[in-house]
Image (cartoon, rainbow, N blue to C red; front, side, top):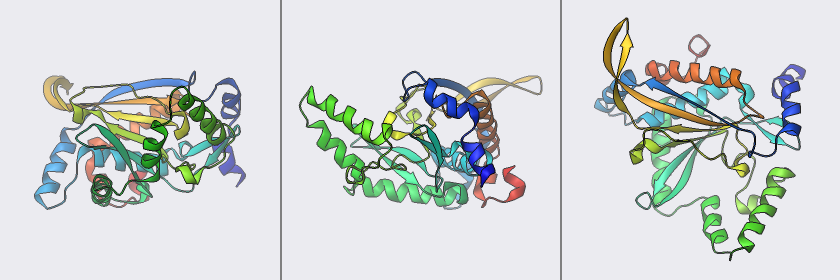
Length: 276
């Protein structure tokens, strides 16, 4: 138990909660391009076999395994200056509604223990429920809070943020729990035609990072000393430096690339010899 506590509350993390404010001056960014040529082929072959998945489903699966198996110390939240390990690995995926004019999210629980096919099915079903009006509490509250007149709206948000994020109290009636936004947030802006982008780090979310997927584009790259055309996709992370540093960012980039360039791994349930 002592060892488990140590990986979450290292000396740096304890200092970081005092050095940095709630994601405002602790934001750091990172970006990289990943070759998704094999991933697209895997998606095509899976669909031919009746298994409908997308690159977003593959990214969700990859992040779940990274948090659950490869970098478990990132699966935590901050409460009163301490890092608390989460009970579940939840990837929160942004979903467009009302023809892109609004947005909700789908939470995939136990994402580290599922195949990409199970994750794809779950996301499709939950997204369909949201679009049909079965909205989560958080979305309903967004509409309610948006009706508060300015400038009172800002004051209400500050008070809610202080109670929930600052003092660490859950507000279930408002849909604000420690896992309301999952373990990490994922959004695909490539579906809007954008090549890359930097996300906001919502303070109330209390997650270590927001991952943004860009548009898939064919680009010339060097392979074995030769210039070839490959399908590349940019991945950008906005990170809370209190939780993540360069070491964690590098590990996440390494494993994200590993999974997406070898997508067949995500088609099987995780076992020890493929998650190391």
